[in-house]
Image 1 (cartoon, rainbow, N blue to C red):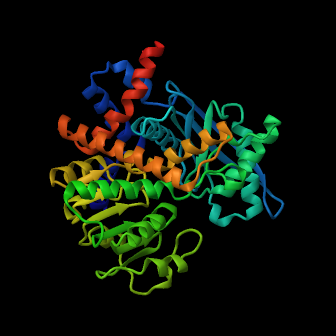
Image 2 (cartoon, rainbow, N blue to C red; image 1 turned 120 degrees about the vertical axis):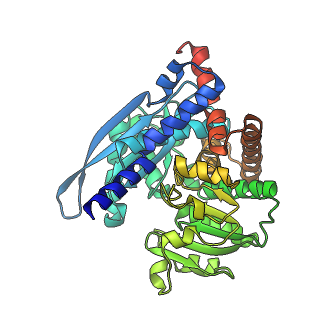
Image 3 (cartoon, one colour; image 1 turned 30 degrees about the vertical axis):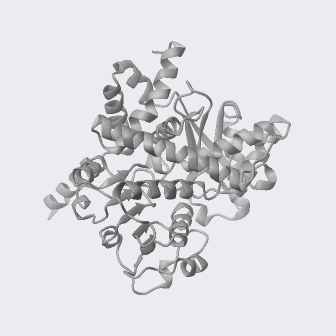
Length: 426
């Protein structure tokens, strides 16, 4: 029994690797396919800057708790770095590094003048009061203020952070800078210089990719059977967009379980019942496991939860014709290989979830100009960029005879590599 457990543990470790190692593997393959020398990979494999900070916060019981936070700036050869800040108990330095690389790739894929950045604080916001969260948000900005700014590194919302937290962070930075500086951060409330469409931007971008992928596979989204794993910000907006488009949402999940119905779930009802963290399944008795959810019979599967969900263990059991990654890293490299060999169209996370950084870019531009666009203008611009980016990667995949993930990395890394080359860095 012990030997079996040890073997299973070793297999799990080999399969998932770690998120930074697997990211580096695909970046290296992409650069080799493009013909860049080894020194370009040496430049790209780690962030150019990595800051670790300790943040003291006075808690409601009058004790002082010290939190650890990170900010990674992957590469600023193209322009200032850009990326979210997540509040989560499982934040690690390796994860933040990998996510900063992904942000660089996303910016390259949708052709934005950014490099990638990412931040995180090890905490559980679900167990913190409103006042404690404000203290943590302001403390983080004070700790990283020397390396961020509208022309250096622009933060944004991420896991368990929202427009209120962005507002506190902007206010703290404006106090330090001694003038109102809305361009320091994106994802703000509209009254503080936020943009229309930012809150739902990631889900809107995923939806656009689903529509384009469905066209390639000859599937009509109206009537298509869809499974959405995850019911947080991205997953819930996504389920609603597809539900309104006529799709049958045959399965959804949250952190506590999953729901399924072959005739389609009532998404409006579930949205009305869920709590602020996207939890709804605790209200139901007849739930299914996450494993069962992923293997449901459907046309389109959207992993919108956490990493390493489609692996060597279950990739052969996926029944969908299209998998669109709304989460970060939901499919391992071995899972990607199996899905591609089976003819399943996998739309990778660095493409599918790039709607968020695209609308963050729109917000930053509006802040810099002091001129604000309508929701219709934002939606039109987002559609144009996402459709162009999808087709660019799809065509690269076809002409280069590589899977969509490698094609996306090739497109994403090229602009950064060229900028570094012209600067004389490599």
